[in-house]
Length: 548
Ligand SMILES: CC(=O)N[C@H]1[C@@H](OP(=O)(O)OP(=O)(O)OC[C@H]2O[C@@H](n3ccc(=O)[nH]c3=O)[C@H](O)[C@@H]2O)O[C@H](CO)[C@@H](O)[C@@H]1O[C@H](C)C(=O)N[C@@H](C)C(=O)N[C@H](CCC(=O)O)C(=O)O
Ligand SMILES: Nc1ncnc2c1ncn2[C@@H]1O[C@H](COP(=O)(O)OP(=O)(O)OP(=O)(O)O)[C@@H](O)[C@H]1O
Image (cartoon, rainbow, N blue to C red; front, top):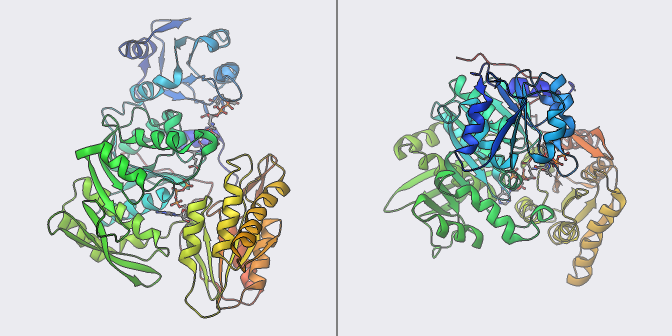
């Protein structure tokens, strides 16, 4: 496995090949124009910057290093490191001023760096003038899958599209694994400028609730934003569902998103649609004839591993589509992708032609309902919250008499602990054999996490009279091996929670672990024939494109 790129190498490949220097004084004026204070220390009238960066470890020569207060440290503690890396100036707040000024570099001091970081990143990279047409996806589940589907439809329409999300960042020939689902504002604006420089006309990105909380998408204007669904997740950050909703909903503010496509299958979607008014297209995927939506999924029928369906819109508008992706929820993702492309202004007849001729909704999404073997059916999926796990388990249940569902999963350490027993109970309800193992324990003791998940499963079995069996197996590779050893050809194995991930973090150490590889090897060891891998994966090296 090639070594991961260093933060500086990653920064280098995600930036535009050149930028016009921007004077610090002009950046100060941009902040003041918003009615906020700004002053410059150690100034020389020619102070100018060619990039913006939030991390001293990624600073490139000529950058403005943005030193923000974090959960652990104030970024100004890294001022000297940023200066040593070649930063031309530092952007910080009053608390960061002394350490930043001590470097002798010019320092732009403003009240709250995160509040203006989008504005400043847009100014440094000129993204207000030149940026790809942007599609944004938010919601608890389905963002990654839907971004791949949109990109695939746009490719079928002859368009090259950039991609930013949990799995990877793709900008032309550059393709690198992601650190964050939604990068920080400076990197996003740099990427937009890079893509524009490469002649990439559209970009599709996941917008996490963290990114909205941390103002990472500030200064971007989305042509179309889409909402998948909202169920429990990230309550460690948001505290309650109301805050989680309000954060997600902020993507759809008129100054941020021109158009919206909102799945109204849950009450949160219905509320968001009401708040968006005319800017939103609404989508119902439940088959409920009384659903109040402009577009609805109808005439669903199984087609290979996936489904064919119709999208019925206002008047007699009709689009026919099919997706080869397993899982009922992928109908919803596919429908949302189609409508987002439609909402971007593509002619319905042209879109229908692309859907009919290129099968764009059958693209493989790494680690999302990824089929490793057909007999037994063995699937790796990223489901790592209660709703996703329930829906993934429901959708893999075979109709073969006597077939069992075996699930392997765990829960992440140092994240929303309330999910653990809930997910255990869901597994006990939907699977016959529940093998509880580790996810990313991070710094938490793994035994306690496993026990909390298993306790939820056992409690559900006792309370609901379920017949499922619960066992604890670790490390995760052993749990996967156990599942393969227990399986017969009629059974289904679902390895849930880690999807495309290739590193497991245990107490600060990254251990190589790829569920797909472990599952393949375990199945082969038990005499089963596995499906060949099809999707090329991003690796930790990158090919750079030529800017046009
Ligand atoms: C909880 C969270 O989101 N934290 C983010 C936050 O970190 P922090 O406040 O702890 O930062 P800190 O460690 O105190 O450091 C303060 C500042 O010093 C800088 N620093 C730090 C060390 C150094 O050597 N040099 C340096 O410049 C840091 O870049 C930071 O700006 O600011 C950092 C700088 O941008 C982020 O990298 C970091 O994301 C961490 C890595 C993270 O794991 N975030 C996750 C939870 C996240 O955002 N996830 C969502 C998806 C969630 C989902 O849907 O599953 C995402 O969009 O990725
Ligand atoms: N529309 C959906 N509704 C419910 N569950 C879904 C939906 N789409 C996908 N899932 C489930 O959620 C998992 C994650 O899917 P995906 O990566 O597409 O979503 P995501 O929103 O990007 O998730 P994350 O933010 O956690 O990366 C899938 O592996 C699948 O189990």
